[in-house]
Length: 290
Image (cartoon, rainbow, N blue to C red; front, side, top):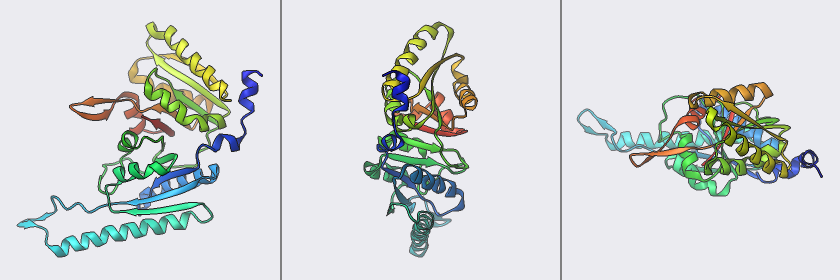
């Protein structure tokens, strides 16, 4: 059997069997509606259970009046607001998920750590799908935190959301642990795609090595029934995200797969380079693993 024969032998039901549950943070406001609608569409596409999580908590530290800390009535009103927000989030979830297999959790906790903890019962976390703005960690789940803390693949939707097609995919290859993890996590999506480009962006003096890397990855993917091909682009590191999006545009890809490349800065894990750019300016869906 040839590699091409293998690539066409994967049936949709086989490819999607690895993703049986999707986790999504549900917020009550209209700005987060694209994320929920995207999650619903993806759960329908994959015939997966959708786990909605309402997570928000009261910030008690630093809430003060001009002459001291807030009185008990103010704190009580803020607590009622949190409860009302969680109730409205559940109502939004129920209204959008009729006919789906669902589960709902309401947690008065910091959203990102809460979602990371309950992701033990999910195969995939759907994040993004909301306007890019300042993150209130007491009400919103920061995508970068989910990538670092959950141990699950994170599918980041563009700010406006949208329905995921997955017919063409670009894999951002870098010879690291995170990239290898991303390939494994993305395999169900790669098997569904009709065209997968494994792309490495490098300097001229690393071109030969990059060809070896991408060829090996492509051969590995073909053994799993993925219609993959390699591409090496000579460009400075600062243009990596631009080059990935150019390739994605050329093949009509709505998904980029990448490792979440982090580094430690004074003991705090932060993202740099391609990962930060993909998170801050997602032009299409991005699947990240760390």
